[in-house]
Length: 131
Image 1 (spheres, helix red, strand yellow):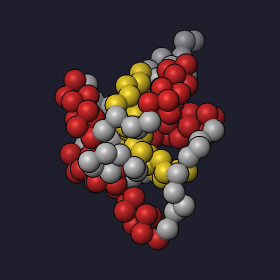
Image 2: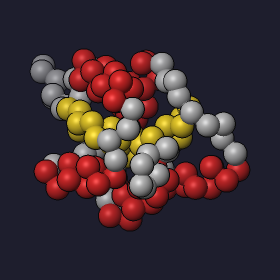
Image 3: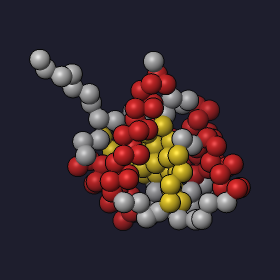
């Protein structure tokens, strides 16, 4: 009996630090995900016009529009999408409340295996929301 092929998810990483963005992109591509990396919210909008994503990874400290504002906008426009916020900051009550539109908020640096597991979860969550 053959098991059904479940395609990996589509992931967009929004990170203005090119080295961090490339490292995460490379790791997730090695895991079989289709990954696009962009530097800011405007580039994310352009990427989503080209193709939808199952999961977003958002840095908090982005130029012009921060990760919290992007997550709020994305949740309103794309309720099924899985959203992760990454921060080098220590979480405070304020950051927890600002991150309400995200499905998870994790601290940088993030171990590759933690990143993989989180993205797997977000893609599954997005699939269940679309049903």
